[in-house]
Length: 100
Image (cartoon, rainbow, N blue to C red; front, top):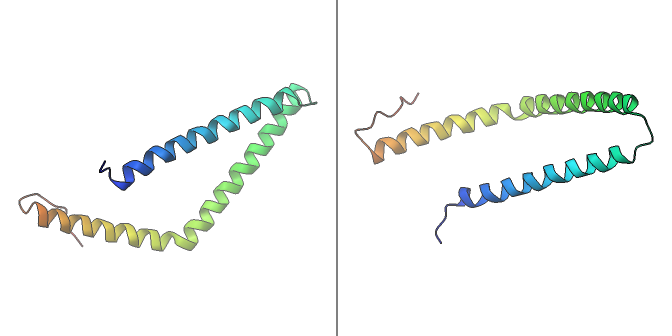
């Protein structure tokens, strides 16, 4: 079968993410079922923990963009230029976007 690489990888990535999400839900349900704290304490703990994790994730994303954002932007721009040039070569009559 001659399937493009990205289609093959997309299916396995989706399955992996689904399995990860299912595992996380099962783990959370088991943890809540066996927790010694009452509902109010558990909700407060989960709220604090989720806010801390969200803040950590946002900070890591900011640092990653600060360190690599220029390279990402450059790579996207180069890809855009390549795609526009390829479209012009393959379909000369097509209205390809202007390349700057």
